[in-house]
Amino acid sequence: MTSRAVFSAGVIGIMLGAATAGAEFYVGGFVGDGFPIDFRNIEGTGLAAGLRQTDSALHETLVVGGKAGYFLERARWAGIEAELHHSNPHLRQNPHAPAGPLPLPTNGALVSMWTGTLNAVVRYPGTRAEPYAGLGLAVAHTHFHNASVDSSALTPGINAMAGVRVFVTPRVALFGEFKYVAIPNMHFSDIGGPGRGATTDFGMPALAVGMTIHLPRMP
Image 1 (tube, rainbow, N blue to C red):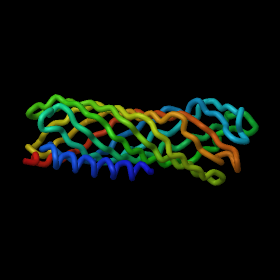
Image 2: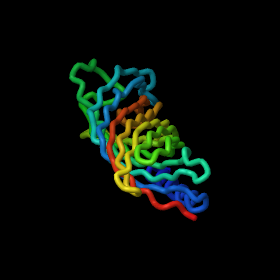
Image 3: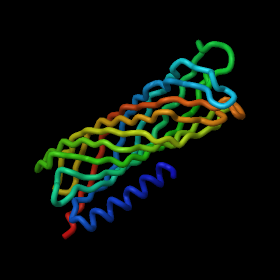
Image 4: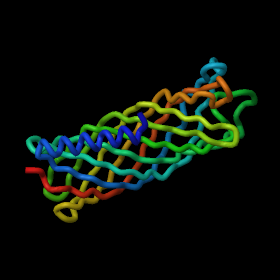
């Protein structure tokens, strides 16, 4: 199941839950800046088993996404939120890498990542400003590509977020948010050639701003 499928399933579940629970439903979008941590704990697999590599640096990236969620009628401080965002934490070139085969490319690579999350959210339901925080599951579809590499990985992880939402009208709010996604043990098969795979850990903090539209509570 891809991250987009996870997000779609999450949105459908949220809408059904909102319709049956007299909930406060909302949808929104955001844009931000991601600061990926280096690929860490890099190890070869398959024919590359036993090979290790120092951390590989990644480029800062634009993060763009959407979210949908709801807060319960009887417990207005608690809710569920699904999110999907895209980023490009491209792999930097490493001209100082040692000679010889390594698990990940050292000549750089384009990286495209779709990340879907499903979070439990708590908030302080104020009249104008609402601080909130969330924690949940993530799944990332990551694609590597350069002149000699074309490999993808679908990997589960965890997601955390915290922010403040400020209502500018009774139904429209602006928000600022810190988020962190951790995707351990990504596995890229054949990234070093046929039968030569690699595993690595990924983490990315990000700062985002966005807008949500809040629909009236269902009767």
